[in-house]
Image 1 (cartoon, rainbow, N blue to C red):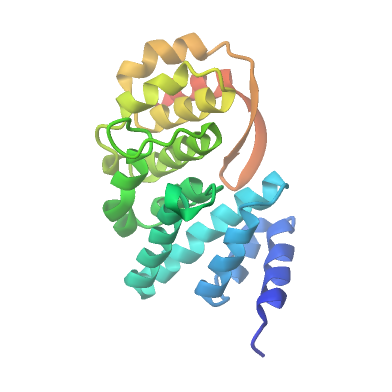
Image 2 (tube, one colour):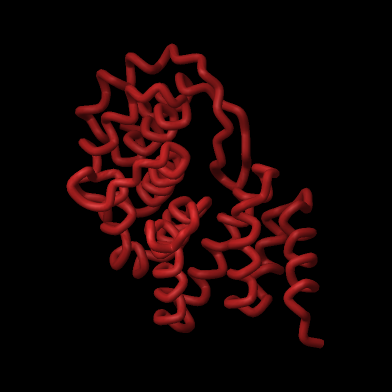
Length: 225
Protein backbone atom coordinates (compact mmCIF):
# COMPACT_ATOMS: atom_id res chain seq x y z
CA UNK A 1 0.00 0.00 0.00
CA UNK A 2 1.34 3.41 -0.98
CA UNK A 3 1.82 5.72 1.98
CA UNK A 4 0.54 9.29 2.02
CA UNK A 5 3.05 12.02 2.78
CA UNK A 6 1.69 12.33 6.31
CA UNK A 7 1.85 8.57 6.92
CA UNK A 8 5.44 8.42 5.67
CA UNK A 9 6.44 11.36 7.87
CA UNK A 10 5.01 9.64 10.93
CA UNK A 11 6.75 6.34 10.11
CA UNK A 12 10.10 8.03 9.55
CA UNK A 13 9.72 10.08 12.72
CA UNK A 14 9.17 6.93 14.78
CA UNK A 15 12.19 5.28 13.15
CA UNK A 16 14.37 8.32 13.74
CA UNK A 17 13.49 8.55 17.44
CA UNK A 18 13.86 4.77 17.97
CA UNK A 19 16.55 3.57 20.36
CA UNK A 20 18.26 1.44 17.69
CA UNK A 21 18.76 4.17 15.11
CA UNK A 22 21.32 2.13 13.17
CA UNK A 23 18.65 -0.48 12.43
CA UNK A 24 16.18 2.29 11.61
CA UNK A 25 18.47 3.56 8.86
CA UNK A 26 18.17 0.26 7.03
CA UNK A 27 14.39 0.52 7.07
CA UNK A 28 14.34 4.19 6.09
CA UNK A 29 16.42 3.41 3.01
CA UNK A 30 13.63 1.15 1.75
CA UNK A 31 11.15 4.03 1.42
CA UNK A 32 10.89 6.06 -1.85
CA UNK A 33 13.93 8.33 -1.77
CA UNK A 34 12.38 11.54 -3.07
CA UNK A 35 9.48 11.37 -0.62
CA UNK A 36 11.81 10.59 2.27
CA UNK A 37 14.03 13.55 1.42
CA UNK A 38 11.07 15.92 1.75
CA UNK A 39 10.43 14.50 5.23
CA UNK A 40 14.08 14.97 6.23
CA UNK A 41 13.97 18.62 5.18
CA UNK A 42 11.03 19.21 7.52
CA UNK A 43 12.93 17.58 10.40
CA UNK A 44 15.89 19.94 9.94
CA UNK A 45 13.72 22.52 11.68
CA UNK A 46 12.92 20.31 14.68
CA UNK A 47 13.49 21.82 18.11
CA UNK A 48 14.72 18.38 19.21
CA UNK A 49 18.41 18.31 18.39
CA UNK A 50 18.54 14.52 18.12
CA UNK A 51 15.73 14.51 15.51
CA UNK A 52 17.51 17.11 13.41
CA UNK A 53 20.85 15.32 13.51
CA UNK A 54 19.43 11.88 12.83
CA UNK A 55 17.48 13.31 9.88
CA UNK A 56 20.78 14.65 8.53
CA UNK A 57 22.37 11.21 8.94
CA UNK A 58 19.39 9.56 7.24
CA UNK A 59 19.54 12.09 4.40
CA UNK A 60 23.16 11.07 3.82
CA UNK A 61 22.31 7.38 3.56
CA UNK A 62 19.26 7.85 1.34
CA UNK A 63 20.84 10.32 -1.10
CA UNK A 64 23.99 8.21 -1.36
CA UNK A 65 21.87 5.19 -2.27
CA UNK A 66 19.91 7.31 -4.75
CA UNK A 67 23.17 8.52 -6.34
CA UNK A 68 24.16 4.92 -7.03
CA UNK A 69 20.85 4.41 -8.83
CA UNK A 70 20.29 7.82 -10.43
CA UNK A 71 23.11 10.35 -10.10
CA UNK A 72 21.15 13.21 -11.61
CA UNK A 73 18.36 12.83 -9.04
CA UNK A 74 20.97 13.03 -6.29
CA UNK A 75 22.45 16.16 -7.90
CA UNK A 76 19.00 17.76 -7.84
CA UNK A 77 18.86 17.27 -4.07
CA UNK A 78 22.33 18.73 -3.64
CA UNK A 79 21.26 21.77 -5.67
CA UNK A 80 18.17 22.10 -3.49
CA UNK A 81 20.39 22.19 -0.40
CA UNK A 82 22.53 24.85 -2.08
CA UNK A 83 19.43 26.87 -2.98
CA UNK A 84 18.34 26.83 0.67
CA UNK A 85 21.58 28.65 1.50
CA UNK A 86 21.05 31.26 -1.20
CA UNK A 87 19.74 34.66 -0.09
CA UNK A 88 17.18 34.54 -2.88
CA UNK A 89 15.55 31.42 -1.39
CA UNK A 90 13.91 33.54 1.29
CA UNK A 91 14.72 30.94 3.96
CA UNK A 92 17.52 30.33 6.44
CA UNK A 93 18.72 26.91 5.31
CA UNK A 94 18.87 25.20 8.70
CA UNK A 95 20.57 21.82 8.40
CA UNK A 96 21.48 22.23 4.75
CA UNK A 97 25.29 22.58 5.07
CA UNK A 98 25.39 19.67 7.55
CA UNK A 99 23.36 17.55 5.12
CA UNK A 100 25.67 18.45 2.25
CA UNK A 101 28.66 17.31 4.29
CA UNK A 102 26.96 14.10 5.39
CA UNK A 103 25.81 13.20 1.87
CA UNK A 104 29.27 13.76 0.42
CA UNK A 105 30.88 11.77 3.22
CA UNK A 106 28.65 8.89 2.13
CA UNK A 107 29.30 9.22 -1.63
CA UNK A 108 32.69 9.97 -3.22
CA UNK A 109 31.19 10.88 -6.59
CA UNK A 110 29.06 13.64 -5.06
CA UNK A 111 32.03 14.76 -2.95
CA UNK A 112 34.13 15.19 -6.07
CA UNK A 113 31.43 17.36 -7.65
CA UNK A 114 30.21 19.47 -4.75
CA UNK A 115 32.97 19.72 -2.11
CA UNK A 116 34.16 23.03 -3.59
CA UNK A 117 30.69 24.49 -3.00
CA UNK A 118 30.65 23.53 0.69
CA UNK A 119 34.17 24.91 1.08
CA UNK A 120 33.14 28.18 -0.57
CA UNK A 121 30.79 29.01 2.32
CA UNK A 122 33.73 29.77 4.63
CA UNK A 123 35.78 31.63 2.01
CA UNK A 124 35.37 35.40 2.12
CA UNK A 125 36.38 35.61 -1.54
CA UNK A 126 33.58 33.23 -2.58
CA UNK A 127 30.16 32.42 -1.04
CA UNK A 128 30.92 33.25 2.60
CA UNK A 129 27.92 32.84 4.90
CA UNK A 130 27.61 35.58 7.51
CA UNK A 131 25.01 33.82 9.68
CA UNK A 132 26.73 32.43 12.80
CA UNK A 133 24.42 29.41 13.15
CA UNK A 134 24.84 28.48 9.49
CA UNK A 135 28.60 28.82 9.90
CA UNK A 136 28.40 26.15 12.59
CA UNK A 137 26.71 23.86 10.09
CA UNK A 138 29.24 24.54 7.35
CA UNK A 139 32.21 23.87 9.62
CA UNK A 140 30.63 20.65 10.90
CA UNK A 141 29.84 19.62 7.31
CA UNK A 142 33.44 20.23 6.29
CA UNK A 143 34.63 18.20 9.27
CA UNK A 144 32.32 15.34 8.36
CA UNK A 145 33.47 15.33 4.74
CA UNK A 146 37.10 15.53 5.88
CA UNK A 147 36.47 12.45 8.01
CA UNK A 148 35.73 10.44 4.86
CA UNK A 149 37.46 12.17 1.92
CA UNK A 150 39.92 14.83 3.10
CA UNK A 151 41.50 14.89 -0.36
CA UNK A 152 38.36 16.60 -1.73
CA UNK A 153 39.02 19.66 0.47
CA UNK A 154 42.25 21.26 -0.74
CA UNK A 155 42.97 24.85 0.33
CA UNK A 156 40.46 24.62 3.17
CA UNK A 157 42.62 24.62 6.30
CA UNK A 158 43.50 28.32 6.36
CA UNK A 159 39.84 29.29 6.09
CA UNK A 160 39.05 27.23 9.19
CA UNK A 161 41.72 28.87 11.37
CA UNK A 162 39.66 31.98 12.25
CA UNK A 163 36.93 29.76 13.70
CA UNK A 164 39.38 28.42 16.29
CA UNK A 165 39.40 31.90 17.86
CA UNK A 166 35.67 32.54 17.54
CA UNK A 167 33.63 33.64 20.56
CA UNK A 168 31.23 30.83 19.63
CA UNK A 169 32.15 27.53 21.28
CA UNK A 170 30.61 25.50 18.46
CA UNK A 171 32.84 27.26 15.96
CA UNK A 172 35.90 26.44 18.05
CA UNK A 173 34.94 22.82 18.64
CA UNK A 174 33.78 21.98 15.12
CA UNK A 175 36.77 23.68 13.49
CA UNK A 176 39.17 21.82 15.80
CA UNK A 177 37.52 18.53 14.80
CA UNK A 178 37.62 19.45 11.11
CA UNK A 179 41.29 20.43 11.22
CA UNK A 180 42.11 17.18 12.96
CA UNK A 181 40.36 15.26 10.20
CA UNK A 182 42.31 17.28 7.64
CA UNK A 183 45.52 16.45 9.56
CA UNK A 184 46.46 20.12 9.57
CA UNK A 185 49.92 20.33 11.08
CA UNK A 186 49.99 24.17 10.97
CA UNK A 187 46.95 24.19 13.26
CA UNK A 188 48.73 22.25 16.02
CA UNK A 189 49.80 25.30 18.05
CA UNK A 190 46.30 26.79 18.04
CA UNK A 191 44.80 23.39 18.91
CA UNK A 192 47.16 23.05 21.88
CA UNK A 193 45.96 26.44 23.09
CA UNK A 194 42.38 25.16 22.92
CA UNK A 195 43.07 21.90 24.73
CA UNK A 196 42.03 23.39 28.10
CA UNK A 197 38.88 25.03 26.73
CA UNK A 198 36.09 23.77 29.00
CA UNK A 199 33.18 25.18 27.02
CA UNK A 200 30.66 22.40 26.41
CA UNK A 201 28.81 21.78 23.15
CA UNK A 202 26.55 19.10 21.69
CA UNK A 203 28.46 17.12 19.08
CA UNK A 204 27.04 14.61 16.60
CA UNK A 205 29.46 11.89 15.51
CA UNK A 206 29.14 8.16 14.80
CA UNK A 207 25.34 8.52 14.86
CA UNK A 208 25.42 9.75 18.45
CA UNK A 209 24.71 13.19 19.90
CA UNK A 210 26.78 13.81 23.01
CA UNK A 211 27.96 16.74 25.15
CA UNK A 212 31.70 17.29 24.79
CA UNK A 213 34.12 20.06 25.64
CA UNK A 214 35.94 22.08 23.02
CA UNK A 215 39.16 21.04 24.78
CA UNK A 216 38.44 17.36 24.25
CA UNK A 217 37.82 17.89 20.53
CA UNK A 218 41.09 19.86 20.31
CA UNK A 219 43.01 17.10 22.07
CA UNK A 220 41.52 14.44 19.77
CA UNK A 221 42.39 16.60 16.76
CA UNK A 222 46.01 16.75 17.88
CA UNK A 223 46.08 12.98 18.14
CA UNK A 224 44.73 12.70 14.57
CA UNK A 225 47.37 15.09 13.29
